[in-house]
Image (cartoon, rainbow, N blue to C red; front, side, top):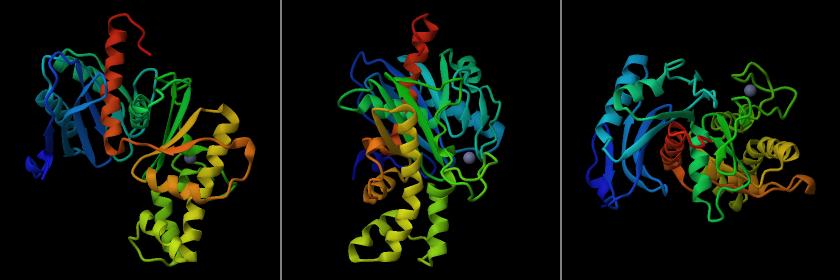
Amino acid sequence: MNRSQAIGFARSRRFWTPMRSGAETAIGVDVGGTRIRVARVSRAGELLERVIEPVGKDRKGFADQLLRLVDDLRTDGDAAVGIGIPGRVDGNSGEIISAGYLDIVGLDLASLITRRTGLPCRIENDATMALIAEGQARPEGAQGLIFMITVGTGIGGAALKDGAPWYGGGFAGQFGHIVVARDGPLCNCGRTGCVETFSSGTALGRLITEAGLPEGIRADDLLARPRTGDRLAAVVLDQWASPLQRAIESLVAVADPRLVLIGGGLGADMTRALERLPRRSKWFEMPVEAASLGDNAGVIGAGLRAFQAVRGAEGGPAA
Ligand SMILES: [Zn+2]
């Protein structure tokens, strides 16, 4: 049994890693649709201490929970706080425009945190936070243009240019809304044909039902099946992944990134499903890899982004 299991709580889980003396640290917060993770992170991206709880859904409950968790974890050595939000966040201002099922639109979380703790605070979309961590963890570093596509309930995205988030006028990187068909299910954005409606986890569930496969079967079960000659599983996987392949080709045609990472809860499965597909055009071939940090990418990236907020507060480049 490892230490995190030994110290498990019913509501929250927590683990400790001894901190090196003199290490500079920041607090990262990853707000998910169902859980909130808060962690102390070193400048090198090490996860030093982490708490996970079910996330408060109502506005007041969420704000109280956030402040309590940050307060509990905070030490005098922490430099700043970064918070990743599952939804539309204006990258330039940090304003929360939408947040799925969470009632936090328009909440000024950065001011709340700064008033309580005195620390600078940076808010970003959660995919941006995850990509910052994944970029720093790459053996070759985060130089150049790197895209990330997160596959979960929906499809999110983020762009990193030479290690810093790139969001154009404020909202670039919403790769789930690349249109790949003239028709299709209605998307949350009000259009039809967005890749999110074909290649998300939600879409996979619909494809499984339509194919008459057992309800609750998982993507990795399907991936294990084609090897045993299961035609139906192969068709479902290809229907799920090929719209995303088309979207990635369009991304490459527009921006020619150095690398496309596939993250989110279904990122590893989607990467394997993409690898099964035949290459359609040499023009748009591109390294596509599964993200490597798993569930911790968002909270580590939020901590790393916090350090950049400190640089901005001190008059340095805020990135
Ligand atoms: Zn859309």
